[in-house]
Image 1: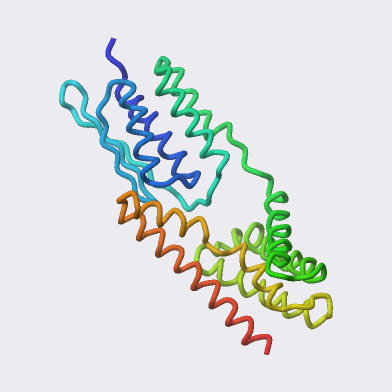
Image 2: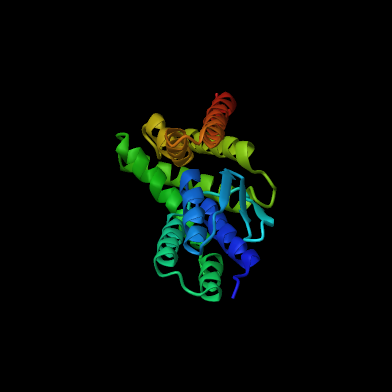
Length: 252
């Protein structure tokens, strides 16, 4: 019985979409989709850039079919990335019936549970506090940085989305909030070292993952994606700088 090529194409595209949404590198996405569809006897063509995935193949009759998915703005989800990698390896190794494989791929997104917002908020608090300690701050600086991280987290997780402030301006305002709170807490006498508090809080905004992935993309020959991610990281760094400058201008 001839396989349903549309279903196979959609299955491969969905796996690629979940990989990209989890923050996977472009070469990993293209290789995983290619391996999966090759395991089912196809010869796909896969092309991905950070916000778009295109998968194409030819049926035995020579009829080309293509699937394209736009990738929305996303962060990095290591848990989802690991689940996608494990499933891809298992499907390539076992090659189960198509319906069974489709269901497993479908459950990747449907069954994945994001962390509760309050857990993410606590992540901002703890990360800022321990970054302040890492740079040499004392316990009072850690407490102050934690409060600054709380302010940044509240803005990013709760306030910016209803106001539809995203991307560059979201980061700019977050950096301004961090700097203003650091100034305020230092003036009130809770914090001691303004620099440690400010830098510790700003570290939660630094695009470290974007820079890392950009270098990996370039090394693997995905120049367009690498430049795209590099530009994203540079814009984020610029937003952090502008936010700090504006807050210092307001606070002095």
